[in-house]
Structures are given as structure tokens and as C-alpha cells.
Image (tube, rainbow, N blue to C red; front, top):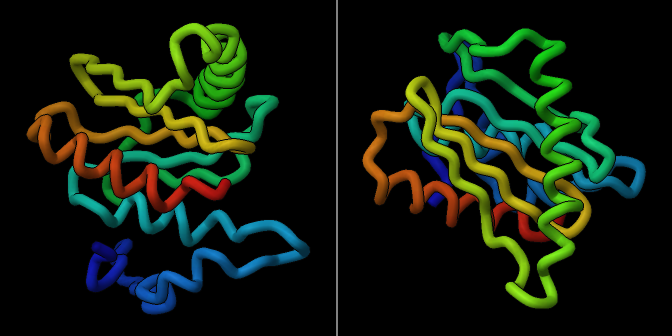
Amino acid sequence: MIPADLTYGTKIYLESRNPAHYLKKDNDKICLLPIVEYILALDPKMRFAAIIDLKGNISEAIMKAGKTSLKTQKEEEHFCKQVAIRRKIRQQFDNSLGPVNYIHIERRKVTQFVLYPKRKTVYVTMEPNMDMERKLEIMELVKKKTAKL
């Protein structure tokens, strides 16, 4: 379900209500900003969403308004590079174990999820005090929204 409005501060992104908006192409590339906005709007306890290329470069990322980053920009960039490296390591086991559905990490200060669409990696954080069923529901929605990346 797409939220009725995607509110950040005083801005409302009405165009994000239209699912076709996520598939608009700009120079033969999917526009990633509406996808990241959609992810953050799924729940008030969402913190951060990023789409990372296969080399670990951040293609699009947003920290939700009103939230403070737990990492510096340099740490965030380093983390994303490490996510790409870990993806390659995990892919070595795809034949024997099957591909990764998602990575779920529970930390004291944050919950982290990593998903592996075909050509991008999706990294999402949320508040750790969110109900586990809701976290998994959100991940399914993110997985569906990013499946074609």
C-alpha cells in the first residue's frame, strides 16, 4: 500500500502517489529518488534509505527529516562499499544455498536491512523498537518496489 502522502517537513510529494512515477526513466535509468522517498514514507520509524550500485557507490540516499545520522558521511560511504563487498562474498554461496532474500541486522540503536535486486543494493534503517512483524511487512513492500532495479 502506498502511503496517502509522502510528507517531509512541509513538502508533500503528491506525484509519489502514482506507482507509474517510480518507473519513469531519465536517460534510460530508473529515477531512484521517488523509490527512496516511498521507502521512508512507509512508516514513521523509518530512518534512512539508500540505493547502492554494485561497486558500493551511493546512487541515491535520504535520511528522514527529523532523524539524525548515527554515522558520519565518510562512515556511511565506507559502510556502503563494505555492503558491496559482502554481497560478492555471499553470492559465492548462491549455487549451494540459494540467493539471499535479505539481510536483517538488529543493533541496539538501529535495525538495518539490506536487499539485493539484480543491479543495485538497497540499504534501509529503522528504529529498533518497531514491532518485528511490521519490520518484515516493510521489507516485503521494499522488496516488491525495488525488484526491477
